[in-house]
Length: 176
Image (cartoon, rainbow, N blue to C red):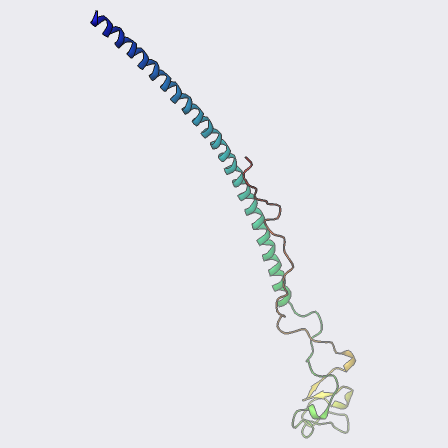
């Protein structure tokens, strides 16, 4: 009788233990399934974001490359323009009105005006031929002179605001 009771009690404890173990296993499997489901959805979301970022990177690189190429072309054309010969006729940049005080020393004595209008004693053209002379160089009349272009290009002008390669791109917070 005691052995039968002990056996029935042992079988009951075994059943309870098995039921408890099965319940724990089911709970663990359910938790695993839920966790894996949330991880899979998080993974899918992250993969979409990675693809979006790759697309953004491609677009950004394309825009940046075209922006830098346009800046380079603009710089090259500015350099070509500054190295090109001036568009206005270039003459010596001397004052248009003659003044004896501005004449170089010796210009009046050795190569000064010739009363006959012929060649001066220095062998240059006579200043009486219609145009003033400075230091033996024939000058154009003041009405025909134009300002000379600068020898060196002026300081670079501030560039207009160029379009940003980031225009049109907004980095949004998570779309969750």
